[in-house]
Length: 342
Image (cartoon, rainbow, N blue to C red; front, side, top):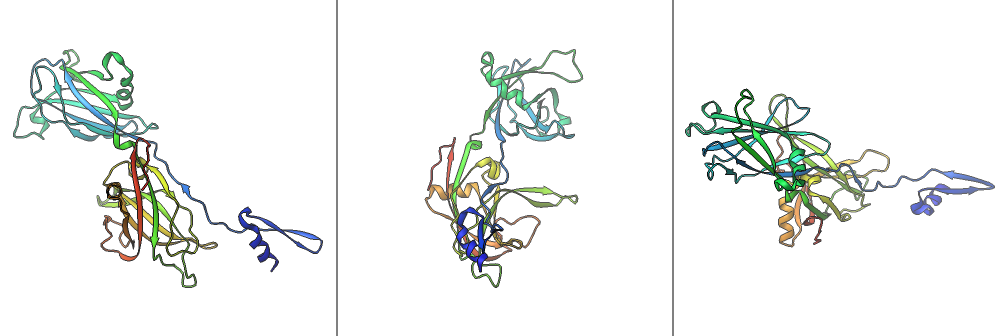
């Protein structure tokens, strides 16, 4: 009885004492619900590259293939290909731009290979085309060139043939980098639940909290795609509520989904227990594009809370899952940090 009375008086302090006769007894602190926590922050950004060629030996139809890799990686990955352009005179301005992830803690290499189109019937067969030269640079070099007034922010490199160093360069490759506007997106929202059920027979109402996960599709050894989740945020616990409403949250779009509007954001709902393991209630899936649309239409985004029954290729709308309850998200999306709240 003494412990119970002391625990009731304790309030938010987390500890208390009780007096029995002439002796003061220190009571153990009661278990408090965990506070919200940012689990992972993405400090990366996305860089948009603009490309042009100048000082060409002669006017010709030229296209570029762009490859990228981290400095510690063994293999290159193809980022994409420019359009095949004849250009104006001896310079070519490509219309297509390329977006690259930038991580300050990693060195990213970029390789640009120039080809003259010889066989229009086999545009993807590089053996049928004429290799002109290549340029290899670090992404950070392109970004630092923004401070060079004499080149107006462009990084200019000569297109050299790797096995014909005695030959003059075919021309010059000019690269310009600027931050992708979508990388500046900030998302703020309020998450609420309706008719959320308890996971325990003896617990009439749940103590729910949610975890936001960034999703990735990865390939296993058999070449099959599987869903990988990385938690980025855990909310506070709403005690004894089947209709919880959590505190408003704000995140950079890069943290939630790398600012990719169609990438899945998986929100898992859990039932908190004081002394035993927390229990999984279900989850819902949203995307940045859906949050933006709901904000423009001034309406909450409502999604069913479902139990995932498959761990391979994730069905976005959880068609194979069993609906338990619903969660709604009131969102706002802004750019450059100027947040608008719904």
